[in-house]
Length: 365
Length: 194
Image (cartoon, chains in turn cyan, yellow):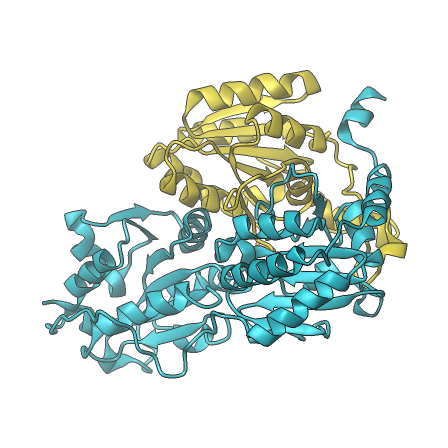
């Protein structure tokens, strides 16, 4: 089977129905293989448009967005989108054309070292210098993009590889040495977190995009309601907790609500879930949540303790951790340790009346 | 008032639309005034802050959910960064609505200049801008405009009825600012409310 046909077959194996791209010389064999229409190709007017469309598709569905662009400027035009997806943990797989293997390094027409350029803004780059195992590469790219902390992956395909005859085999299992995201949080840490929650007088949940990526919104709502604790969302976390819920404080940070920022400032415990303590949230880290201890649940160990030291780090998938936390909390609730801290609720409802000019009030003036 | 437009978008869509945004003041107003109730409803460029993200992201979301109401809440600065995708949205006849909060400036940077740079408005005026209604028309999309508060709701309702690619030019006040604001590197005691 031709390399280009293997590309299409592999997309179908991954359940991809739509891809976004712009053609060019080095990628033309793959566009040609897509002519059959078995996978819908959306022709964009610029490669940056293609990758942001793929990001929008991925964020709306939770499935990886797929991009197909040519070598050289095709690749360099997606670098902004790759960096964007990397920062916001959006699963995207980008296939770039590359000049034929025989002329790589010769400054061939539309040659760029896209693998080198994207090393710092992708989770992985898979240059495909030969025909061996293209199905395996393809599957690995989707696996890395969509598991663990999601993010962008780049697969660089020289033109001669997409034109060559190869054996096609699509592995049924992925086995990547050195890539084993931790899913289940440490049981002892979850127990410590439960004890801290039980002892807290002014707890706040600070929830981010990780809640959405791990499909944990329902668990988050259950935790918040069970311990009667208010929730603030980051920009990336909006929608991860109902924006009309009585426990919702609004967004926090630079342009966050007075209530949310007051709650963080006064809290004695911050339960950080699927967040990374971004500077637009913390402001001056030395004055951030001055009275609080921190529990931090995140799948990415490198996000923990990066900007703010935390007391109970829990590395794991947010949904898996919250399910376990719920069990622990319910067990404690049986013994009546957790209670609604009414003074805390009152203080927060007081700060709700502090607000800046709302558009309605301005319209009336 | 740009915030009023966001409130009206929330009201007219009954909080059920998929919202994408570009980057800047409009993004913060969208975050503040569109109360999302479900995950994957609010799609924005958070970490990198990529102007030009929202319109193509809206196209991607619309392709995934053809029947959804998808609205890109945009600024005039950001929209111009990937405006060429108007051709794509027309080619595939996607009912994406671009709601431009048009303040004829790079509003968030202008806001920082007002607060932190002695009102020296260097390089933030977009005094030369395209006519967005004509621009939409040139691409084969529908262009609409609202210049007064009472026009906001009818224009949005019209855009939603059309189920075609629509660009709405909401002409808003240039000097409006996003509040509350905690200046960069500050803390809650530095919070500005007006």
